[in-house]
Image (cartoon, rainbow, N blue to C red; front, side):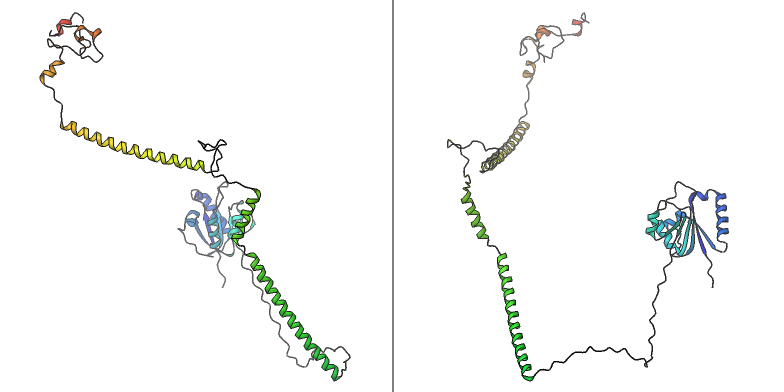
Length: 339
């Protein structure tokens, strides 16, 4: 039974907006595939999986994209088109020409620009086994033996030869055993040579130090016999490490002392604050009138507040007022002329 060919038409979204282009595309496909079953979808819906086409469901796929500058197809979509196309089918239409590597990786064969073919599997050739002939009347090939002279030996000679052969075999066997023993003994000696005694290495190092007269300094002392106050820049005697350790110890001691002093100061300040809260300072009426310079007989600390601004302190409460006599009542009318 002859199968009806099927064609999948994938339209770019911009094609749908042009009705004339859609009709022209349909007429071209109908003329090219007159007896085929045509299925039409938007390529975006096909790529997103909204439309299920199935594997090897279409014999031909036609892609219509009028945008000549935007013909690129994602590699994932190319693989999906390959799976949807039947074996030996064709993908044709507005296809990109700069994605040959992606096309080949998906499995297509680029026959020409705008035409990709999904190759059909090659038929395997099976070699038939030739039928063997049952003709038993045919004779097998014969081979002629080469002529040779048979050596005639006496019984005594044969006995001597056998004895010599036994002796040679025994000697060969002994030689082989001795060779094996020698080989394994040499191998064991070599294994022993690979082991190195660490104590021997230490002894060799000490001998080398004695030979070159290397002196390891114990203390970094000046020629005069005095001890250095500060380690050298390239100190190797350990004085630099000792100085750093002493510096760290003194720094830690200072930090601990300062911490304790700060704690004690905080505690003492809290105690003073508590005492001040308990013992509140209150001024009597007489003590308050002592600083009121308008009362007769009361003067300021400097004794010159009533003399005027030229004789008043920076923090005097009477700055800006005219001179007055102690006990004199000051009124606004008294300096009205100055306004």
